[in-house]
Image (tube, rainbow, N blue to C red):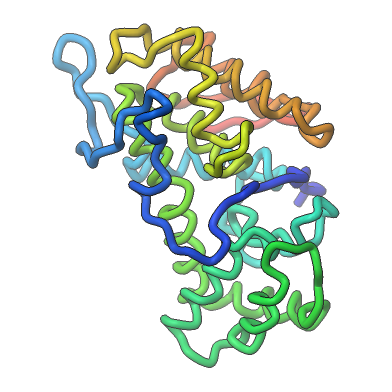
Length: 286
């Protein structure tokens, strides 16, 4: 596998110990948001054509590959369960299929879930240390032994499923739910998901909810009478602004040479084939 281009920031001000549901992560009404509901996996399209949303299994697989191309320089997202390293972003360890961080609470939530489902697993002994380092970049009580344990756990289907479920609960489901409520298709829903993966949905100015709020200054989502492509474009503009607030995000190719490419082609349903680039590397899904 190619050397991964791990993003050097993640989940600012997100989930420090309290388990939040998808509805709690939705954009508040005060920000001009529509509270996400649970529409079906297909949405009405033009002339009565049913559109497939991102939570359709085939579309979701595409989403996982797109994110992995940016996060791990690989389309093989399932190979990332055992990934773990400190990428020197001030958030401790970054690990797993979506970059769970020891300093931001989501890694702790994941290991606690794994422990509930399989008590006494290889990571259970590190729960006290994970609770102590939460909110810091410390490796105290973790270190190389924890890294080895993580890689061992990655071979356990129970741990793999726990990663899948936490990814969905914290990132994927809130993004898709908000996208459905905004009346946008798979491409827009993916733009939301990729933003939550990188920025989290906290209260800071670069979080997902505030990226969306910034986009509302210049466009409206379809549910409010706006044009879908124009809304996605405004959201991507706001996303690029958020990325550029940190030096680590100066390369915005995951938006510019990926999502904008699909938008320019008006591929609002994220239909294959797909061709894009991230960090100069080319990718294809047939």
